[in-house]
Length: 304
Image (cartoon, rainbow, N blue to C red; front, side, top):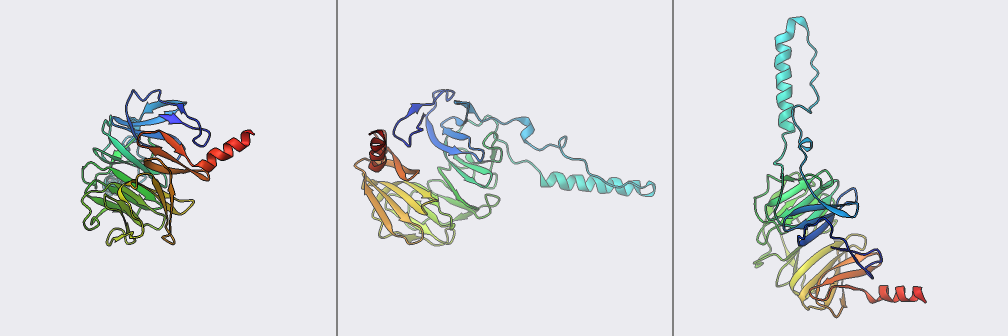
C-alpha cells in the first residue's frame, strides 16, 4: 500500500499491519477511515497502521441491551398487562432481529461502495454491509451467497454484480432485486452507477447502459472499446471514466448528461483512472502510477 499527499507526484509506503496480504480494493467509510479489501478480509487504517476489521459482541442488538417496554399495570388487569408486554417484546425482537454477523471474515474483498452511512463490500462469500464505519460487517442475507466481484452506489441506488449476475437496490440496500444481464454479455468485467440511477456495465465487447434499473440495456455505439477493465462515476464532473485493454493506452470520459465522449491517449496500458483535484491519476498494469502532464507541469512551474 502506498499513499500520496502531493496529488500523485510522490508516494510513500503505508503497509504496516496488512500482514503481507495483497490489496484488491480500497474504500472510505463515512467517518473518513480508509478501508482495504484483501484476499484475507477487511482492514481499517488507524494511526498510520492497518487493523483487521472485527465483530465485537456488543455490535449486535440483543435482548439484554434492548430498552424495557413500558406497560401500565393496574391491579384488575395484571394478566392482560403481562400478555400485552409479551406481545410487545416479541414484536420488538422480530423487528430488530440481527442479520448474519460475519465474525472473523477471511474471504477475498473485491470492492466497496458507500450510500448514506452504510458501506457495502463485494466479496467471495457474499455481499457484506456495515453501519459502523467498517468496524463490524454483516451478510446481506437476501442476496445469493455467491462470489460478488463488483459493487457500486450513487444516492439510494446500489448495484452488485458477480461475473454472471446483477442485483439492484433502489432503497439504499434494504431490498434487492435481480435484473437481466445485457444481451450477449457472457461475463461482466466492470460496473458503475451514476447519480441518476443509471447502471453501467462493461465487458469484452464494450460498455452498456440501463436507464431503468436493468430492465433494458443499450450499447454505447460511439464508445469503441474492448475488454473494459474499469468504470468509475466521477460525481463532481458528472462523467463515467472508462479504461479498457483495447485501445490499451486511452482513457475515456462519458458525460452522463449529454453522452459526449472525451478521450486521452496516455501512452500507458491503464488499469483504472481516478480524479484527484483537477487532474487524473491512473494505475498502469506494469509501470506503476501515472499522472496527467498538466499536473506535472504545474508542479515544475511552482518550483521555478
